[in-house]
Length: 517
Image (cartoon, rainbow, N blue to C red; front, side, top):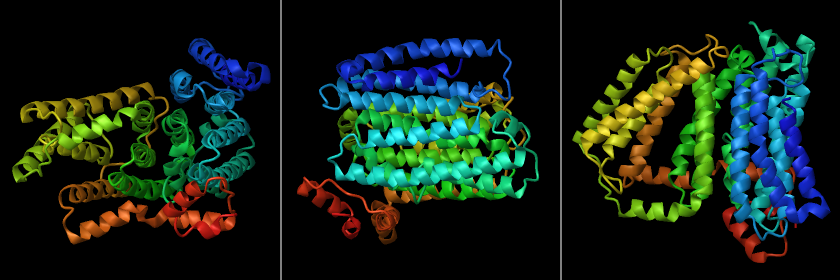
């Protein structure tokens, strides 16, 4: 029955594209989004009574079930929001057609047990998203971003296709559940190459440095498309790693590729985000950093934490984009808040409260594993307590300490509950405390804390000013990548608006020679 969900979305997309039904596209899409939860409930219920067949073209793992619930929920929210947001657009029928077909491809990828079906859904997602990102073809920035995304998507798809082919040659099966059940070390050469290619595809899908620039520039797309991308589609890189983790954890090259690239992306993207003024651009940099953190958790073997991160980030980012119109009000509240630099006493109290909260939660939930996630939690709590006077509505320090304790306990509880729910999927592959991977992650988080504090409270120092200027330029990583991309494959930008063309030239002053005119 699992195939019924992608079939529903695909059929809805086809109906929205029919000439006679274009005026009713919004209503058709809304009806489909409303009945999708009922269909999914029937599908999930059937899984309790049917034993999974390892050679079934569609499968019903718990991870895919959680992701399908998220997709159906997001579909309902986005279609409902689009009823008013997209009203009056001339090409609204094309929007709903592309949106529903993209959702069909996403649900196909999440429910497919056949590698070729998985790959076909992955390809369909990229093609559908490309149409949505170019919904406003008169915007040069959107066209340029979609052009870079198109190239990267083809590279990721080719990497996956080669990886899947190598796995088939090694195991003589296309079925995902059979492949993952047969994974045992040491890996063969084919399996090692496949693991690295899957890791590369995941890094590209999650917009990790230095192939991140397109994610920052697709904010020109309609807000529901941005929400779909940042809250759903970009998470598929994490889903890919979690699905193929029985293979990836046996490849040190693939794991360290994730650790290094995702770790540096988390550090750099989180710092660059602080220099941005545009709400959507800040959210885009936040997405890149969050995806890096999720891949870092995957590389550390923290399966349950990565799943929890994936689900909560999706809901949060969808709300952030759809609620971005209230950003001005929130910005004004932050402006009127007192801007006090914490003194030594405030930092001491913050570190004390954060350390106590973290160690109490570790003891409460009997945690065993890498310490880096708890270090990050402690840093976040320390900043929360230290900056207690620099918020619009300050509260008492004692109350804030209890909040820090409650947040730490909630974090440990949610992680433990998710681990219990996914206990059949979690093997003993978690990195040990103070292992090389754990120390690398700790170094990333400590560097992030130190640099963020310097940028926030010591911006007057000369080296901090120079560093801030480079951060504002994105460390020039995307400019170089864009320049190379346009040399390899020039893009035709909209020619009817000289003003917009000039605006893109100002954003990318060294790239105008690469445009085809």
